[in-house]
Figure 1 (cartoon, rainbow, N blue to C red):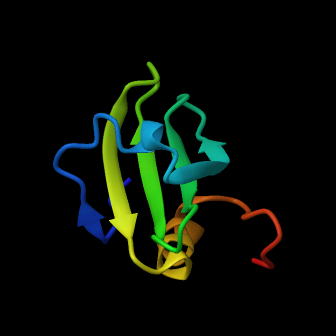
Figure 2: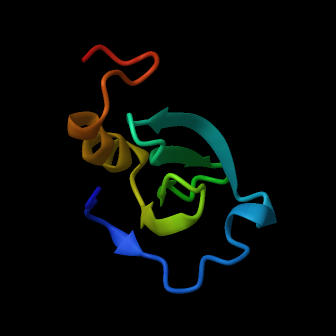
Length: 84
């Protein structure tokens, strides 16, 4: 799951600050996941990847939420509310 964007170097509490809301999670057959988080204050979106054990492996910030969705699109079956 290699995504293009700005990799967050210290994401330890980024998602806990309330600046992003969880939108959707996609899981593959191994249990690994891609999560899409939308910014709450026009601060873009984040894509977070987790391994099968549920441990975060990457978090990538996109200034444009549409760019985050474009990065996810080839890796998932369907994005809710968006024609594929």
